[in-house]
Image 1: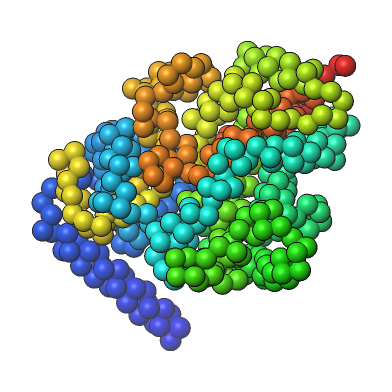
Image 2 (image 1 turned 180 degrees about the horizontal axis):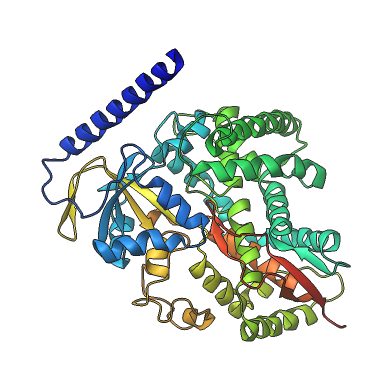
Length: 483
């Protein structure tokens, strides 16, 4: 009886607390008479559950299009991850956000990201991102990445020999994840041993799944598991960082061999070097394609997988012809090079159409640093803003017959400006775009020149959790090409 009474008191106090928060929240914005139309949902939780569940059900665009139809096709308000959010829905909104970086808006990440990456976010997320972006261009620009194409091709060959060749059926997603993660470990950390790479793979999968989750730190929640995984990975990374310091001091490692060496040797304008924990956090961010930095392993394993899922027969025939012509031009044992990549124009159009239908970056948050007006609506300082790739990628105004798979959309001048945004745009466009292009094309070349395939689950859904993945991992039957 006492336990029942105590439970009732706790529940009553919880409801009262949420009600007070709800009333104070709405009162705080009463002075803004012309906020965007929309629904703020429940106190604290807002509409987070529906936002996440539509993606997990395979229809991430539903959350946005339902509200665009009900409230506005330009901007609507909601509450996600405990924050008031204005969602931009069209090319004008994308252009506005990309053009006003550090003027009216700045980068923002949910508290789940801040808690998973505590040390690298002791300063503002925006400042940390600026520091990272100063380091990346030397390694991520096309001319620097050219020397990595042979390494990518070598790892791809080893990957297909070990996991695909000689098998009648495979499940593509976990294999693609292994490939992209192995490649990222090699290029970012100079780790090539498959056993060493495997030590990171499972914790990274847990970490990636928990980054954009409701930040409830209770045992068994995605957020709690992500925090634990982050600690495991950091411990391993710190051991690697300590050893690299020794190797650099003894000239056993090159200052330019990978991103880790650059981070260890780079100092800020005050001559200060990053701590081991800061470097570990940034490496984690790079390896999962998070923190608005390089597009890396986990995001693009999704894309190389989906490059197998989505193309229809005529599309496959087109990039089979292109890739086989390149394969036939190579001498035995000769690796892919920059000239080969430049010939893969149709294949890249296929990949772009994949990313239109299943964008690796679903969208991103900004924070209003000043009051401003957009499309006639008031946006208060402190509100969060969100642009969604699906709001434009599946809009028939920009892409006629949006559900149709059609790589020809990217021929000639391509889509309208600010309508196709798988890598974001403006000054915060993903600096790993070229890395992603090389990684995807090298994978496509190696799979297409070896196999045709049949999906074993023709109606398998693409779900978002928090990145686009096949619901059952994409099992396929392999059909080797006859020599």
